[in-house]
Each structure stands twice: as C-alpha cells, then as structure tokens.
Image (cartoon, rainbow, N blue to C red; front, side):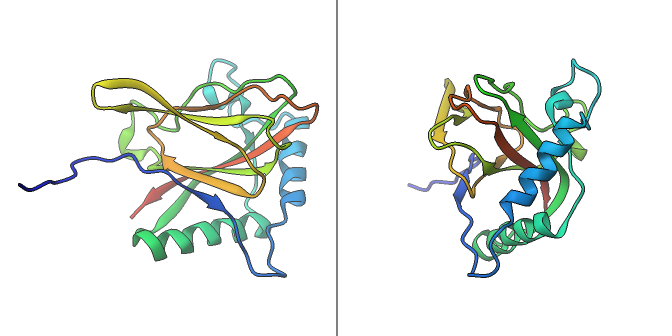
Length: 183
C-alpha cells in the first residue's frame, strides 16, 4: 500500500530567538504601527474593504531584521524562499474583535500572496487568541486556537481565514502582518 499527500495545510510557528544584541526592536515597530493607526494611514479608505483596518508601514531596518530571520529559517528548514508582498499593522482596542479574513484576492489568485505571517508585537498576556479556520476533508469549519504571545510568529497559507478574539486587556494589542510569495 502506498500513500501520497496531495494537499496539506501547514502552520509554522514559534518564538523569534535572535542572538544577544540582535533582538527585534518591538518597541519601535509598535510605535510605527500605532503612529499609522493614530494618523489613520490605512491600506484602504473604503470602509467595506477588509484592509480598512490595516495600517500602512514603511519598510525599515527593524522590520527587515524580523523578515530576514523568518526568511532565513524558512529556507533552511523547508527549502523554499519567501518574497515579501505586503506589510501592514493592526491595532485592537480593549474588547475589539478582528474581522474574519484571509489575504488573497479571489478574482486574482495568480497575484495573491501564498503565505501570511502574523507577528505579535505587543499584546497583554492571555488577552486574545489567534483563530485559524480550516477544513479537514468532509469535516468543515474546523478551527485552531492559539493564545498569542509577544515575539512569537504564525505563518500559514494566505487562503486560510483567520481572526483575533476580543482583546480582554485594558491596553492596545499591536500586531504586524506580512504576506509572502514563495519560490
């Protein structure tokens, strides 16, 4: 008897562990995201668009180090290269729930992202969960729940829908999202 895997939904996750002196500057990344949020520098100004609650970020060295870390470890472990497509931030106020969404354009799949990276910049401990929806053949509507932790990342196919549960803290939750194409 032989078996071939025709399709799989992979989720790569973990803590960003950098050498001493090369830590990710989460405070600066948070400041950039919150500044964009306060200035209402949105990816889309159409309030019917999923990206209405996404805030633009300029590429910077501090974000570059994080992206280099993810890319280098992904290439080493999975032998695939990742190319950045979009970078944006999200800010969730106390009691706020994110929209359930994915990061593909259904009418332009060819130019859509292959992977979505969620990086937790600054969230209070146990304040919310990342929920990823998936189908397991005929068992539809399955979900994977993970409590978010600062300096942790979650990388999954951009076709997967995901959302953040309500922010149970009294502080803002700040999250960085990067979409990738792989080669």
